[in-house]
Length: 254
Image (tube, rainbow, N blue to C red):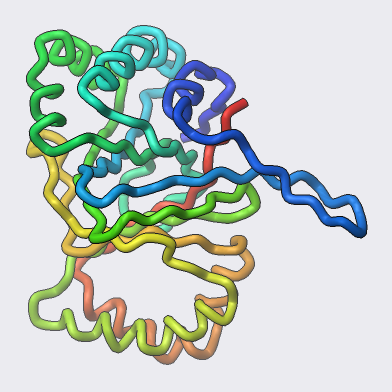
């Protein structure tokens, strides 16, 4: 689905309102193109929601005006804090062609459930779902507070894997080879998530998830073209019954 973010500027603004101002990278010796940066902090003890949506074509503006402009202030009254919004550039694995996804922080699962039960939100949720082709959510946590720097010149991937109960050990064998290659080429896993659960009506509950920062698409393609991947890629295929992965770019405040 082709999406133009400027068609719903209020949405982008609402979802990144708590983010810090971009930091401009400068070279003291020569002028370099401006690279916007910001930081996301994932707090220990908080509930982190990752939500993925596919907006029905033509509904972007209405969704912004009729849902997000009302739902976001209501959610913030329950302690929700938007952490970051990402625009999907490619669905690498899986059938769902989600166009946007984001991280949201809640004080607790109990706070999120109280918000979900709020009569005002129940009405807004019906409006939202009528304008979406798909929506899914997963609840996460972190064992320790982690801050990661997000850059506009990097590619960000979120993936989920449903592990085969007989062949799950193959995943470790895959990363024993993949890990050193990725690290040597500037690929990082900025935060390690624990899975808390998923709301039944928007079920998305793989056995493992990951958040990956790639320097660019070329490096990613180089990995899949490498002799190392050709030698161990079958381990990943054996380990997972199903994989989901979306590539994305961070949406900076305009």
